[in-house]
Image 1 (cartoon, rainbow, N blue to C red):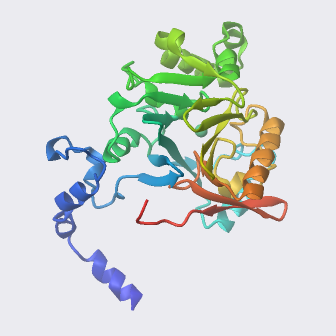
Image 2: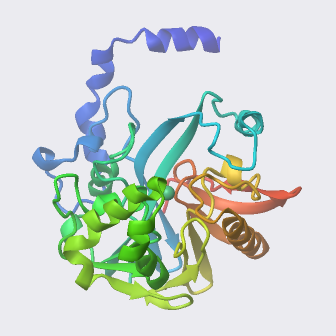
Length: 338
Ligand SMILES: [Zn+2]
């Protein structure tokens, strides 16, 4: 029965599906103040093989958070991806999570927070410099009703390319020229240290160069923050070192509601939430990253707090439950109401 229905659906000519395009495009931009078909972002008009625009809104007390998807990288299976697990163990973990085993799927999702009358972006995605399958952040951001010209604050969790390249395109063009940009003091101190850049091993040189490409022209205007401080309305910075020296997570609080933006405390949850002791090749200090991961996952599990990860499957939002020697990421239940 289901097979024949599938066959039937597949037989519908592409043109028939396309005929619903314009109506779909309009209903996909409920946040736009003045919908204008001529300026509608490309992502609002899905091709037959694309999803609807990748944004997901939810409330944290008085705060409104929107998860904005930048895409999905089918990373070829890399035997060195997890330093302290064999490729077979990694494959087994992916299989257990019903993921493909010839690639490791890496999703990218940022958070936009409306708080105290301000629009605050936490991490900016890959811009136009990411791997294949990424680069849809701006289209999704606009489809969600936002405008880069009216972003008040941009908070950067750490300065890896997939979190900062959305600040400046490959040709040097800035995308948020009027926003205040904030980075943790230890992260800034580490990457902007010219002596460290000169002595960096080959594998880190590219990142040191990219940090200078993105922040060089605006270095004097970048504001720095420290651990435990409320850095924007309702947003508290929490030091989460290991992935990078000054990597940070953020706790959004309003009344009794809370969500923990875990940044890259874990890469894909099927690997690093399920196996918190695993060290990703991107974790600069692997054992410190494991310590931080366990601490924040323990906190989320104990408080039954909502969490958002940068590299979890969209909308990258859910809860943490303890399970054996590790944890399970339990995705949030989607709701049509915000
Ligand atoms: Zn990342």
